[in-house]
View 1 (cartoon, rainbow, N blue to C red):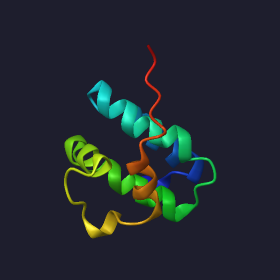
View 2: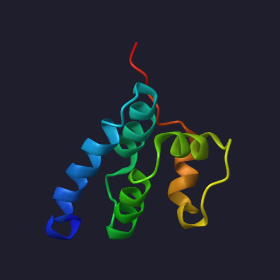
View 3: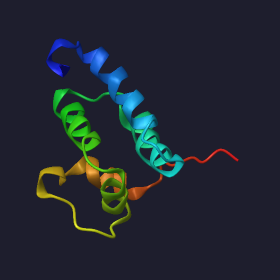
View 4: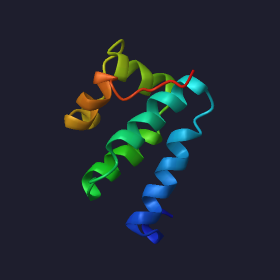
Length: 92
């Protein structure tokens, strides 16, 4: 179905999926990453993020925290940004 969406529609869908993961921790990590970096994404970066959203939250979080090796298909600058964790802003 993503093929039927415009690029803007895919971004909206990705934002929703990033912020509705099922746990607050995953929402902050994955949703926060989206909010911080999605401006300026091109097709390649959005496709990477859409593929990431298909993975289990515990795996994504482990890759970001560097506690588990990540699949080679996710290697690159976006994962490196995610591993910095400087985008997580937890409201108090």
